[in-house]
Length: 221
Image (cartoon, rainbow, N blue to C red):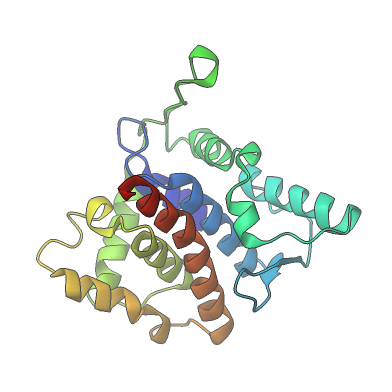
């Protein structure tokens, strides 16, 4: 799952959050997974509405929680759900669900939350191989390798949250910032990425960037 791999990238080996905006990155990646699985789609508005195509579980706790949430609001209550709204729903606990799924798979450990949730759970690395393989794959793509839709989503989210050089420090070594930016911007014209996926990536990244930019303005104001 794209969301699992994004979680690995945004989580330090010691188990804490390595880069900010992990919640938004994981939520955006979860929606991308559901789009690729043909469970949801986005309309063409500036702040896209999410259409629920199929609410059957996909077998991942985070993704199934989103499907249940959308079914309750769209199918049962007749409400519209904007992508921007979904990005801010902390009650879904997508980070925790994703982290626990990776723990159950033997990839991450789990140190539970403490002090009534004031100290967040940590997910130290148990099996480093999946993240090592992911990083090698992304490094290959950044240097001209053919990207998959998952690669395009992941690198676009990293670019959108301004965390490429922090998270992929070793993978982009020797590349200028201009070269990295150009490599990511060219992803949607390379590989097996159709127009529907390209449009979805653009909308997802725009939605993820919005709270990031608000945070930058707030912190600098």
